Image 1 (cartoon, one colour):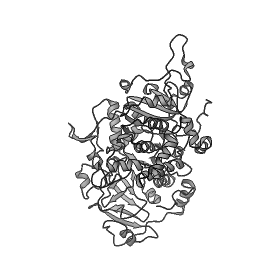
Image 2 (cartoon, rainbow over the protein chains, first blue to last red):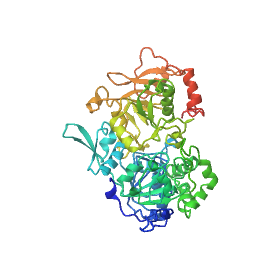
Image 3 (cartoon, rainbow over the protein chains, first blue to last red):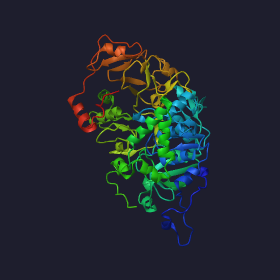
Image 4 (cartoon, each protein chain N blue to C red):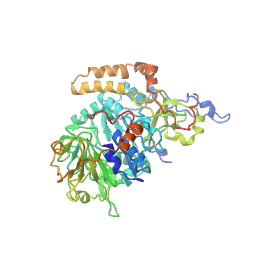
Length: 338
Length: 248
């Protein structure tokens, strides 16, 4: 199956929940892929080509990104499908990014991304011109195992002309096409709402490019709000968005996407994002890094672990305020009790 | 603006939308008036959302209420290549030939003097049957003679520029702002004034456009929203008044 030749042996410890359900009285138990947040972050080396799942500030693995930032893992090449926001801007602000292959980095209705914008203007990060067709087409080339993916829609605009990822050519049929180079990240980190311990992932809302990137990446680490029993997956196999063979590690981090949203679980934390932006703009516009350093100390490097981070962002009360309807679609079964 | 766009969408067609609440409202309004069979993809990649109100970010999961299907990036890639009925774009800059720019200002695309967010999608302008331009601000800073970088391919350098670039379908149909609707001369492809909204004047539109804007001998007023359209917008689509907030 596609992706199988790019699977690496995972570094999971087999100590997660749900193992008993699959333990045969005769065979060896199926391996749990659940690992700690810190172990997952430690497995990502400096200089990695790192893809981040989700879209803008929705379904983003923020807890994993903060764990990487705490470790000071630098020289990163960032990818997404095709946009990024808080996570990319934070990593750039901390000087951990060498290159971006991101079609859009912004904060949507909250404005531009301060550190990304400045890095692009000053040339301190290599910002590769790209768009959806070069990004998606690049993943498609990898998934299909071909040296480039032909597209026709990369013409007529300056991004196609400027991008080293796009090469015009004439096919044997006489068609004028564009060859999009393969994109094959070393690691994909993504956020979904649920997964079982074996790595069967359940996105409850949008999935965007997570499946496509998972198939194109050598390793896949999934951060979830909740690890569920295998029975949840078996009751609704149509709801599995990534089958387990595509996943190498599962990290349970409740509210881990915060301050980004987790679809059908909690909204993005607009007030927190605005505080981040205020600190980031002060650093790039006024040259005053103290508010950003205070933000980093309070929310990134300061907290001992993810639980302490959640306390610092306002704890249960703040999180409850973000838990908006809908939490399931009409007629869908009620949430199984954990 | 939502009403002008809604009226131009056709029953039974399929299109995609960017994250803007104005565009979402236009598609919903079309479905709730003359185009009940219209199908559109929204920012969550949900198909035909029917939320009780509008939200600031198009990828907000509350926009999944009433969706009939949820797509993924394979769909985005395929639609970008195959094309569909329509898409909508705004821009940091929009020029006289309907090209738009969302990358930034400067001369070197790899090192712009001022970097904006970037252009997520560039395919629909070359693949779709047509696209619409819109801007929530009508200023000389937005409406420039020539964009610094073409990220949305409009009529390129005018006349048959698009055909010479190998693009044989589609193109910008019109541009709507809070002041006016502007369409394109069928031969020169230059943006020209089509109608002015109530409460604004031709002189105002011309003064706030940074290139020479051809003005017809008589300029009609943009047809006002009907009572029914307003009622649907205010009670079914946007009861919390997201569209009625002052535009910056």
